[in-house]
Length: 587
Image (cartoon, one colour):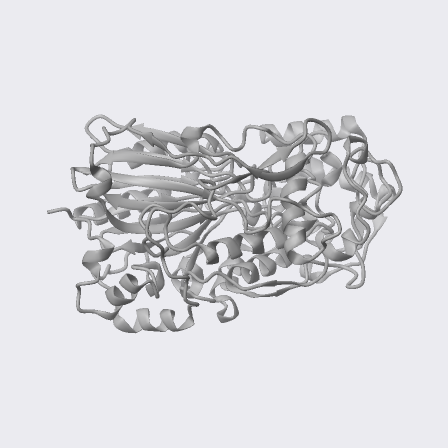
């Protein structure tokens, strides 16, 4: 008999948690708010009280339809350009069909008539909720990297809220119709390690009213009203660099961009994984320098930089040659006279890892739960940002912290965390549990082995070592991550060990702005399938420049991201990286 229990089987168990899971009121696991801590006893089942408390705080999801379904997913339609050149308007485009991948196991015939649903969840990644007026942002490096400044990013909050609205409207999992059990964010929830951004992100996810503005509460003070040709000036007559490419004149854009937005919050429990932009100033510099903290809340902002000086700074960032930001600091100090005045704001201060944890644990941000969204007081006490949680009776989730506090945007794991991961997988494997691992960085972007200043002498371990460790545990089904802003699905198989899929998902800041639904099913033939289905935000594909409502801004957010100069065109990946069925042999 399979060690995996289906949603239907769980419904026959005489406890409230199983009943809630089967009826869709709460997930099999995420709804119980159970996080498993290093060294803790792992209960076989959650208590009735935990399930009941979360179900009462959750909004009821829509009734599930007959499965499968395509509406509201990229199986139905995908935003696509109309017209041939210049600034291109978006509309409804052709669907992305599902591809079956048998790299790791042969798909059995007739499995669609036998399979049973085991779990279903949604992955958000790289939301990059942005405080676009923050003094430490380096928009002036736009000529060196398209990630320094994007024409769409003033609308990141409206875009993220629209993604929440999409998930709330999904009528169960697209393949099986199973209730969606939780949402997991895989890092870069914020953009610049700013308290403003952290507050906005938490309200997007759990619900609340958000004024995506800092500094002067009455007006926007950033590069888009600077009169500089380097940036799209949406309300000015200036023919800036982007207008020369066809970007529109939109009167009232900036006032609309900082206007209050309302998020309904997810109607599902959600969990959080940390990324480098959540931990490091600029996403790449070691934290803790008082100069950067003071600069963040101060009243000066650099908006232009000589191209050669910018190239020197960015080349150094790419190679990890300035992990503590010494050269960046020196450059800022030498350009004081070129800076512009902005309104100081203490809320722009950087947040520490401890503050990140406590913000997640704040009851004001609990929403549908669980309390802490995976993090607990045990993390606060230990100073860690990794944990495990129960996905289904026989499946655990493991959230890792892959950011290197020593600096640089690539990641790694410290020895203590790597050993904890190995021990956790071994313990749960012996108990018959499968595992899905979550992190921000991909295996290909974990090459930063710089020492963590808080743990001198502790080695750091890259993606190859993590892959090897996961391959030694036959119960690992998938490693789900982000960071690269690109859809990519990679099979990994180890002789004598296990096999699993690495599922990397595109961001929600750069086009095509996607999230991914992942379903786990037992094919009842010795194989397991992971179905992944990509979804866009709820905003219409077609935009109207005169519509500056919350929904209209979310549509514009997508269209601007498609047209952003210098943006990559390969981020959607190939058909094999999008809507897929990934087959695995049972361990």
